[in-house]
Length: 141
Length: 141
Length: 141
Image 1 (spheres, rainbow over the protein chains, first blue to last red):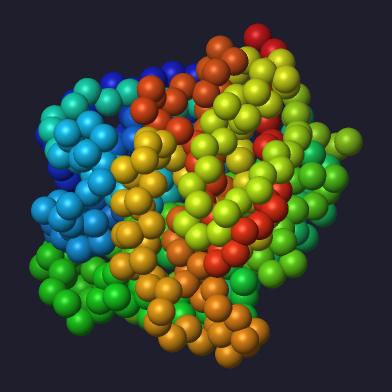
Image 2 (cartoon, one colour):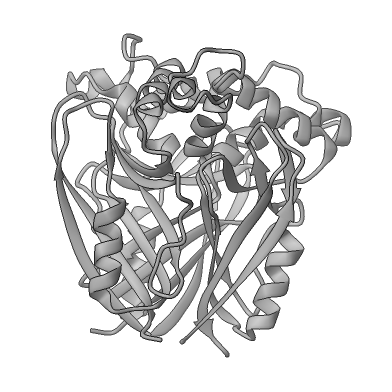
């Protein structure tokens, strides 16, 4: 069993930017040479999230709309008192969605459905540079 | 360290079918012969989810009711414009709940609570056949 | 590759107690001696959750407020018929947030952001003693 580690760096456009990172994650799996195992995808920071969805223009509007209902931007957040910040809703959404996603690797491939992509969700109010960690554990055959 | 891989195939009844897959996952852990490690349970497709809950008749009604509040079925979804589909709410719910769950294996057992089961949630509008991937990494002693 | 296992035991104050467990998890990583790999943090039981957030007093009020909107405590839950219980909302919230979190270990450290902590959320209605499982897989260099 081997561990392979790398990072992906992406630029986002602020909330709610949904970025398809499937190809980059699969490329890291390819580079690792590992055929059977798992890949753990993690975002550093508490206002971003990793999940999967069908990456298409409709859901890129639907997901932000539902997140706005769960934790509305305009509402008062106690978080803003701590830092005179404006992203309390971003934090709450991120904690619900989660900062990491672990997926199987089978015969060198992440066995996603055809209409299933790995996505990063920028939940912060501003454009950001994001470090996404890719940790792969597995075997070469 | 070894990797053991297998699949579980289940038939679901359409939304929101909650299926207890604990015994089948534990059986795969038994078959693996691995005693210390982790198991990653993943559903292929973007309208299903894996989580844990107490599997009992009450929560089988409560969870769908709360999901209906979060992402109501009757509402307009932009997703429907892309595919002339009816399952925009299914997709949004699935992205929030997550397509995978990773659990520890300790002395050959997943240390779940007595009232804690691993469940698959069928969030799509129709009955489906689902492939659930079980990837186990660990040691024999 | 090696597996290192340990438990953390914490006392909580009932809902919604948010407990910062970052230092204890990192200490287990230190004790393991493993430098590259993953750590899987899991709570036994179906009324607690593991996630990450910025651990500060504002969000400790904001997160419970949003959870109360998602699954209100006062509402009727079918779960209460099964056990004559009062924690249906706790269960639903826990299933949405998730019982486990898997994170990378890079050079002996979990690469969290400065304002990103690993937290346990007590969602049950009463104070509890909680067992949190820490399963680490990785290599010594």
